[in-house]
Length: 319
Image (cartoon, rainbow, N blue to C red):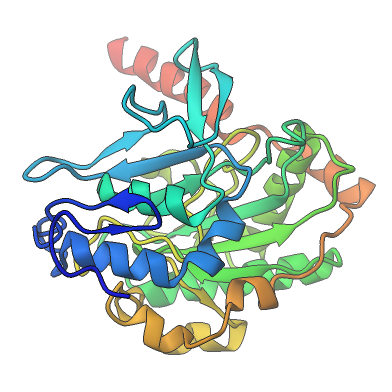
């Protein structure tokens, strides 16, 4: 069934302004967003289910913004969970996107991007994946991020782990490593730091773990800070990027032959067909070794280290 005009409904959601442009440079309408998300619902809902959700919305003619706290007009049939946000020092009521109706409601709210947490509500004290976010420098090509992804894969293999890979939908690559529930968040974070450091050592000419941009020297940032209560854009999520690109799962042997622009809300469905590569290519949950965790605990936490270094540099400039 297609959505044909404003005021139409599907799965109990009534749509409005379907033919409005989605955002500047999207080359897509709100209708295109609704059609895409509904078509991938059986693939995207499993990666959103039971995870507190933040979304990036784009109101007509306005800048994109991230929404964590559900608005007051949120329907009562959308499940929510209230969590303490340490950064803002307040309780935040997050939506849980567990079904088609909720997903379509978000689409009607012009929610383009879907950023679930790495922990589920049934185990808020455990993350389900380690994430390495590979961010190339400004103006660099996707191919450098791909080369770094292969370094991460080698680093994982060295410690007996496997990961799945996807485009970020922007300019980088995400590597997800599923883990079992034995490691508390601080140990999972340590293991992520250790893997990032190992990837950097494999080829320090192209990869860096330097958190401060001015220290990266034009290299790909192997970001190991997506830990604990962090969110990461989900597989199959559209992005607020030119062409309305999609964060698209790939086989490792496909990485070198694609660019992020190959996958948009117009083209991703044809590429997917009936497949769900994120589900089929994701390894089973893996146990983190004590040695890897110990190795990571010896590495300073990047954000904390950068904060202290920033203060030190500021003092030096003043003096």
